[in-house]
Length: 207
Image: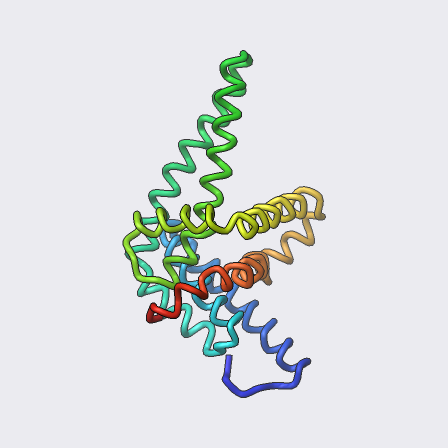
């Protein structure tokens, strides 16, 4: 977005247009699948700058950051994707066994899934905002999640709301929302939450 200050209505309209554009470009850059990690990191970079009022050219900045985050974002994505796939397989396998031990294992797997989801919420924004290795970014994500339990709980509550929306909304609404703002809007709300968490660490860090 341009740096010129608009009146509130035009500012909101301008933001909506750019968010729709960003949503479409994000979905397109995720099509190869393995680029999803870099795409998410770049998306959060742009959105956190928007939250902080550091307006710029959204799509141009996103594409620039996509290139910068490609290596780290892709590596982190593969780590999280493989661990997530393993968790999913076991969550489907163990409940079907139908015995006491399998239910205990399922409970443990459910807890691990929440941890995996929590780490994922912090990892990609961290990669977008800070320079680090993929493994260190994942470690830092877990550390931030533990130190900011209220924020973590809020992020997980948002997940629950999104799941309810997906389950109970008409298909026509979902087909309309996904290409328009289905990814960017939830990510923007998460960015508003995470911006405050990252702020103390950004004073000593260069973008």
